[in-house]
Length: 466
Image (tube, rainbow, N blue to C red):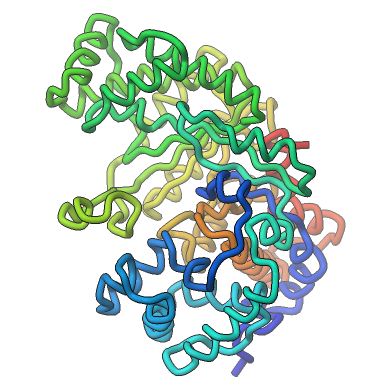
């Protein structure tokens, strides 16, 4: 029996241990997609306790707690911080196989120097030890980011955002950069309530009156220029599936008028509008030299009752099962045909689509960048040991794994950088097994370049950060 989560955790061969400890472990982090708050980073406040640091806003933990039968007051309700921590600890002891179990213990080890397994019996002791560490130490956001060896943080920001906190952070002498990412989902969601109000706000931000789809595209283009001036190099879009429906100008304006008046739209009408706007955005991203990230496959806000009570991003999303290949191909091809396809990262949330995306990449590669079209890392419901391994294998089987841009946290937590370590251990375990089995020739210089590239260097080069 191996020791619980020791220094060689997940490293099941001598080669895996060498790859991790000599090449991967000390690499910095490029967190090119996350949901950290630039305001919180700027204000840099010390958390009151470990519950505030760990449980506030973490729908991963809330979802697990609910599945264990925990009352909502211990998740989003008015239970005390210690009660909430105890409820999570009790849930964790039953979460065998869940990455939360590993993430929590990696965070306890790396940030609190606590090696004791967390469960219902140890909850009080660990709560007190962690809070003592917080009260006597520095657990402010900027300190945690620096301690985690993060060099680049790309937050997720709406086009109408003033980016005031990014500007303030840029004035500070920090050992890392906090950069905005352009997330235009609200401008694309013509079928959702509040669309017309949002378009009015977009018009104000862009200092233009929006009366047509062309005006929407112009306004988004102006905001993209503004983001670019503040250091943005990344856009991000989230879809059930990437839409592609052809339309003419007359159709588009009729659809836009219906959406602005709050009328019900068909799925085809929604897709026609989204296609037109996304093609315009893709061209703009290419012009600016940005990376276009596309997250595919989340089915959101499934529980209407809880959505009405708690709102979005509270743990009621799941994996969708749409067919994605054909519209994605046509969308990418339309941009590529006119020489306007930007560097693109494709993320899937349903592992049935691993082969779809891993083969889609090869259709649109070019010498503009190494692996210009990337298969994004396993995320959300797939950033498990099995999910990460499956994504790495699919890319290894069908693409060029050595040019992969690697992991991002996709998180709202300042201690979630332990997930990069989790990913790196899984990466070294997999590549180590291939080398041990004689499936890949061991040349230390080349293998070192691959490991360091996937852990950090490929992303920095791909996004143009250095």
